[in-house]
Every structure is written in structure tokens, then in C-alpha cells.
Length: 84
Image 1 (cartoon, rainbow, N blue to C red):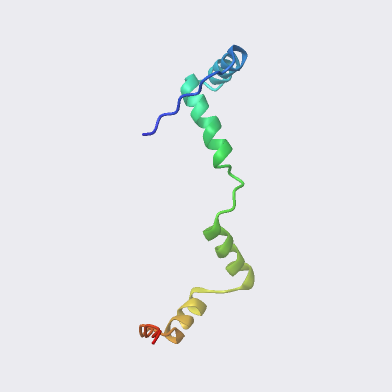
Image 2 (image 1 turned 90 degrees about the vertical axis):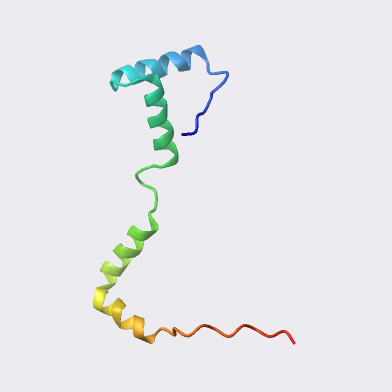
């Protein structure tokens, strides 16, 4: 697991982190991990797969519709371009 060192953290900020950690019943280190995780991976972030599935549902697409597209797709490999 990667480790991160934070330098020059003010005493007031460190105290506030310790208090916040105690309020949540975890260590200061666990509290900082949670803060960082929430900051860089918020629950409201766009998840592409979820967005595409929701769009398909709104359009009324079914698995049968998707299966119907498969036979129409060209399966033979493309010929390489010739630059001569």
C-alpha cells in the first residue's frame, strides 16, 4: 500500500483532525484516509457504466435489442492499409 507523509500541518489542523477522528470513533490516520477518499472519489461522481445503463432504460432498450445488433456487426478483420 502506498504511504503519504504530510509536512507542515498546523497544530490547530492536527488537533481538529484528532477531534474529528474521535467523534467518528477511529484513529487520526483512518480519519485522514476517509477525508482523502471522499475528496477524490465522491459519491456524486459520474459513473459511465451506470449512466449508460440508465440512458438505455429511459430509451426502453432491452437485452434483446442489444443481441439483435450483434449479428449485424462485421466480424472479419479489416485489411491493413497499403501506403504504396
